[in-house]
Each structure stands twice: as C-alpha cells, then as structure tokens.
Amino acid sequence: MSDTNVINSENIVGGEGGFLSTANNPVICIFHLIFKGASIIAFIFLNLFIDEDIATFLIVVILCAVDFWTVKNVTGRLLVNLRWWSEIDESGEENWIYESDDGKKAVGRTDSFVFWSALYGYPMFWLIFGLIDFLSFKFLWIILCVICFTLSFTNAQGYYGCQQDQKTKLSAFV
Image (tube, rainbow, N blue to C red; front, side, top):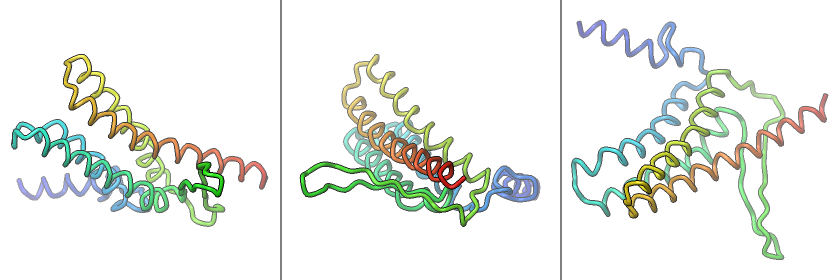
C-alpha cells in the first residue's frame, strides 16, 4: 500500500503523467505554490494551534513578505522570464521598470500556467478573507488581509505591466 502512495505522489509532482511533468522548472513551480500556500494555511490554522493573535499576525506577514520577495526576484525570472522593480528618480517620482526576456529562453506552458494562476489567484484569497473578516468584525485580521492583499496585488500589478511590455516588444519585433 505504501508503494501505491509513492507512485501517486510522483504522478502529482512530476512523474510520468503528473501535473508538473511537463514543467520546465517543476521545483520552482512547487516552491512558487508552497510560499503562497504557507501563508494561507498559517492564516487559517495557526491560531487554532498556538492561540496567539500577534504571533499568528507576524508569522503570516513574514510568510507573505517572503512570498513577495521570492515571486518578484526569483520565480518570475525563472518561470516566465519577467522582472519588475521601481526606482525613485531625482525629482522624487516613482518609476516602474519592466524587464522581459527577448524570447531566447522558452517559457513552458505548465510553468506559465502555475505562475499566472497563482499570481492572480493569491490576491483573490486575501480579498475574500478580508471580506469575511470585515463581516465578522475581526479588525486585526482585516489589517492582516489588507497587508497581504497589498503585497500580492503589487506583485500581480508589476507582472501585468511586464506582460504588457513583453507583448509590446513582440508586436514591435513582428
């Protein structure tokens, strides 16, 4: 029976016929999902186990910040060949800079699907959690949801800009 469980878990992760078997970077895809899932799972379940609101708040914020940094600096480059950042110029204005690959490195369909689905789905989770907490009058958790939504939405906005920049480059090239 344990052999069957091993075979099934291999199929999910990247074995023959598994979901991530067609991914160019299955390990990066898994970490992309794990960082997002860790903050959501911590938000839902951590208070049940430690019964400390402030500790839960801090752990979830740290997990969301780690996810923000990882997506912005690692998984975006490796999964979809995109990168964004912002700079403040001499006059104090913020400028968003979008960088996309020139198409030299192929982006896998599975990598792209995992990246974009998780990137756009993650802020929706925080929005739903925030609405539920608003209706439940849980103001500490509303603040947490706003922080996590802001971080995840900023990443989504940055990569949306990268995607538009890449489409502009491709249409100019053609």
